[in-house]
Amino acid sequence: MDRADLVRLRRARDRMDREYARPLDVTALARDALMSPGHFSRSFRTAFGETPYAYLMTRRIERAKALLRRGDLTVTEVCMAVGGSSLGSFSSRFTQLVGESPSAYRARNHAALAGIPPCVAKIVTRPVRNKETRPARHVIA
Image (cartoon, rainbow, N blue to C red; front, side):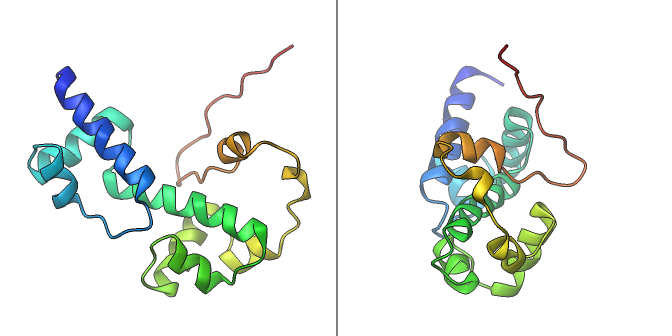
């Protein structure tokens, strides 16, 4: 994969980070990256270790977790805020990635994250799909 392809793939990933709540599809992202949908998906997975769809869903669930921790929105409102179109699909995917339902996650005490900068909380609470492991944590002595 050449440098120009990596630049276009990063732009597509950045777009997913910015527009996670909007309807995004692989065909549109591939067109923006000047690639066919199949080549885009394969290249994205090679570059970032997951498919474009998996990356987008991880972003959505990550944001949903932050909104649920706040506690001022219902699960349905959070689903719609992160771009979900079906509460059932959102809840299933959330449960698959997080290991508990959105309602259970919302009801849990999140005091351990109080006072932690959002950029650190994002890393600590990032959803991990089955068969994946979290990256090793660096300990500063």
